[in-house]
Length: 406
Image (cartoon, rainbow, N blue to C red; front, side):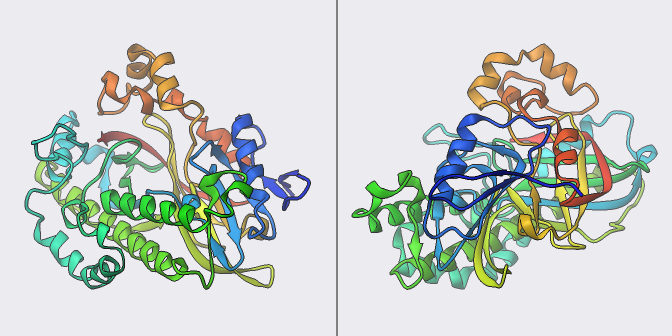
């Protein structure tokens, strides 16, 4: 039986790590230890193999809290996650050149961001399409309630970002599995409105704990206790953002499939229900005889029999997995490969030629602006999967052939 590593820190809950055979930064371990010292954390922290430094809380960690919640642990990309679905297509059905497929997806799914003042953001809808408007109708009432409580959320990108990709490590990919079946897979979250919600409540938590913040290991670990003014409001807001993120991914999947049908001659349909899962989120769960608020920051639920998606990098394999329900890990697993170097460091160390070679088999961007997303910036995905072999089992291995980045 594979056993996690343990770290014992005086005055802190235990830390259990599934990191055997993968690099872990000293700064990430220090960050985990800071979280473990919080009085609201119980009974231990679970660290996934893709762990790396984050804001306040390490990415790739599972933080259970009792009657309290840490907004910075959830972060600002609330509900960020994955969706994937298998189609009836096979590799032989794809055109010899995949440039047209990539172009069609790029036209169908707004991506990237325009930051110049006075110019429309290319990553947002000018006129949200019917599918986005229909999804928004199910979100609008609760958003209005949120805005009544927190008026500053009114002027955020919400409907105009619903069904859009974003930037950074968000992507849309066409992949082939071990039987050469064609899959669509994408990664995104709650976009501008989720960022605004996260930033707003992190600041509120710090303000609420102003008298105690000096006693915290880090100011980003400020938290709301159950019964406090903003505890229930934050849970309402984060639940809404997670719903937005799930709808966002579903719209992009539908639009990607529609775009593919314009350039792929053979008719096709989905042959397997889409897996749509968060990996930056919080929810109430029962563990070790207690009802806890479990925050997965860069981690995914892996209840026994539950399907999930663990992506690699732009040039590495990804995996459809089935959870094994490991209780020590709070039934969780990694959310991806995990960064091995910062974006700044990646741009300093990885050359464009290296990026081109690493993505030679993928129809994707091969320019300096995506160097920070090149495979060398991430941990080896095979080592990450080996380190969590008691958390998930691999059902499908996916190799991307098209990748759209913001």
